Image 1 (tube, rainbow, N blue to C red):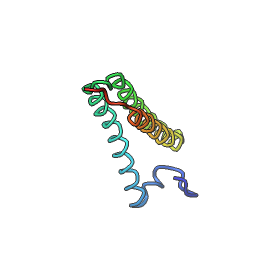
Image 2: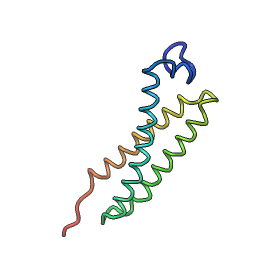
Image 3: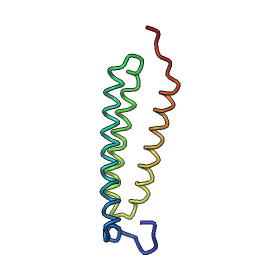
Image 4: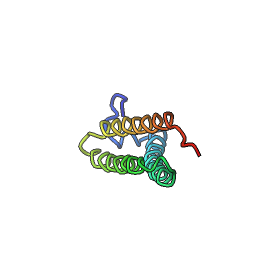
Length: 109
């Protein structure tokens, strides 16, 4: 919707590329949410990682709330803002988890 004259969802979905983009975006968001909960379950089972269980769940819940906000904000013209918040929060969550994993020292055993 960054193209000139493409200001609403109806213009975005007017061609195959826009429809495909919208569909793939929704699938990606839903997979990200599901992955956060799978990661939380893995953290819960792994010794030394249990303290990160609620963090992963929080990411999933927060992302789901942003998705609801994105859907609700489309009519108010705030869809682009919420899309950027989704992208930024997703990237930040991945960076935090990646940093934690990179710094993790296995327990001797």
